[in-house]
Length: 83
Image (tube, rainbow, N blue to C red; front, side):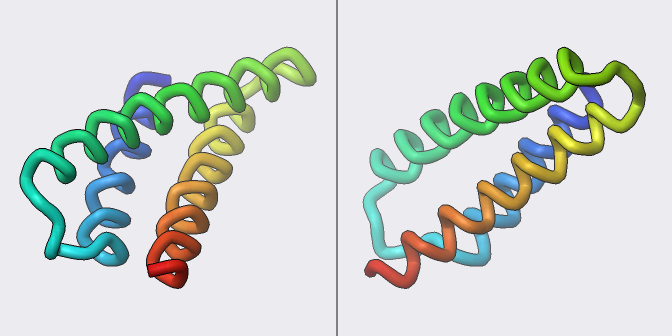
């Protein structure tokens, strides 16, 4: 599980690089990174626990990674369109 959580944090870096604006201050970038990291961990662990309670197996980890990645990209795209 730790490996896939690390992969979801790596996805966070790519999402930030692709979609988030570069004109913001350094303090905003740090705040966004910490907040997004905590949110990513919470989503991943929450989806993992929910999927594990519904049916245990290796598939639960993949589902957690997929849902987390989709939510990361989806929220970044919505944010960039709102700007």
